Image (tube, rainbow, N blue to C red):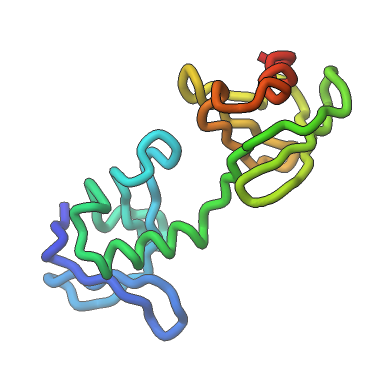
Length: 157
C-alpha cells in the first residue's frame, strides 16, 4: 500500500490525472474509483491505472491535503453520473415497460423502466433504478419523497 506522503498527484499536459510514486519517478495516468459510491462516497477510493491495476488506496478523502482532495473530487465529478430522483411526476402506465417522468437534482427527464428487476434496494430507504440504457437513477431516501411520488413508486415495490 502506498501512503499519502509516498506519491504526488497532478494533471499532465493533456489534463489527465497522473500519479508519481516516490520510489519510481515515472508518471502514470490514473483514475479514482470509489469502492462504495452510494453508501460511503468519501471513503475507500482506489487510484487505478489505465489497465485497471490499483496503484494507491485512499482510506478517506478528508485525510488528504486539500489540493489532492480537490483534484480527486473534480475527477470523480467528471466521470460519475447518477442523478438523484427528487419527485416522480407521472408514469405512462403501471405495466412494464413503463416511461417514468421525473424531477432529478440535474433537471427534469424521462426514462423507460424495462422491468421491475431494474429497481434495486440499496438499503431500507434507498433505491437504484436502471433505465433501458443502463443509466442509473438514485432515490436516496424514499420516505423523503412527496406523497404522490411514494404512491407511484409503491406500484413497483
